View 1 (cartoon, rainbow, N blue to C red):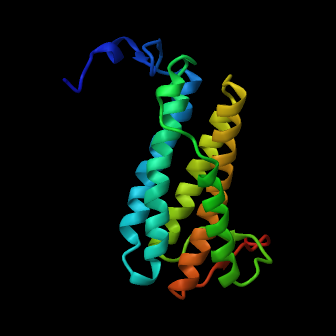
View 2 (cartoon, helix red, strand yellow; view 1 turned 135 degrees about the vertical axis):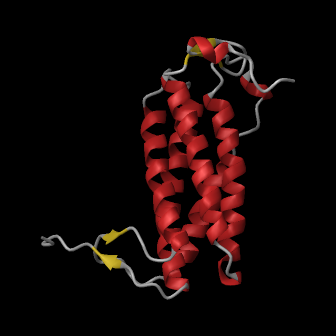
Length: 186
């Protein structure tokens, strides 16, 4: 199979199931943003080399696979084809929540807004969080069936919370101080 189809030369692409749409279709914006997030997660993962950060590495690698599954559903407009796609599992969201709770239990309480930064992995996790939030906004703009729409939106909302907590946790574990937002900065 050739990697190029030349369909994109006319500003079109095909969804799962064969429907041809414009490259600027909101559905492409949604799953393209999740693809971008997945790439940024790879950069963050490359920074998580310390053994004490390995549990997070495992979780985020699972998230990468889950994002591909979400993307396949977002790329599918043909409801008759959807049963052939990988399942979307509520257990993924539960696992994110469990992980958030475990990391939060180790962290000092958050009393102020913080700026992104600290450890390089933490910085990249903040970039991932913002891309995830953009993906969430793109998904909210789609005319999806209720179950797919609701799941993808909920997953991305929980994932962005997870990425924020992960960034804080990495800084905590690597003894990097959080930078508190100074609302009076000049």
